[in-house]
Length: 203
Image (cartoon, rainbow, N blue to C red):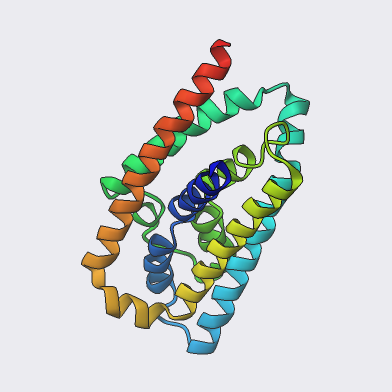
């Protein structure tokens, strides 16, 4: 039962921090002037680059923290606070998509702002480190968490490949509602993370 609850929690955190819906809105806005083939290429490249960044943090993130002398509990506490603030931003309608109103045509939009900071957001990077704690989770559990990450990235790619169709179907009000709900869930999960980390630090 614990494993199932953890997997569901991990999945919700990845969904909220990667946030395919907000990425979809940003993607549609940035690729409106390009061809369908180019739009497909951008979608594949931005998700692939995001996957590389996040997997690197899954593999090396905790070693970097150890080298810096930062306890994972402290990082988890900070992560819970950041997740909460991230969730609040989503609920009240501010975030990555709201902050980026224009982009330079000469730059690779697949890398910025789509891969980073939209998909591989600070929250998603933080989640990759916290949710694969080497001292708490086995290699098999970490592999499952990584698989959940890949599933969310795969969902993000599918959404982006159907960008215009999906955006037309759910509309602006639908996308806004889904972002708000994910933000509320993330904020609730963040409170639990913060309490657990605080208890461990007090011990």
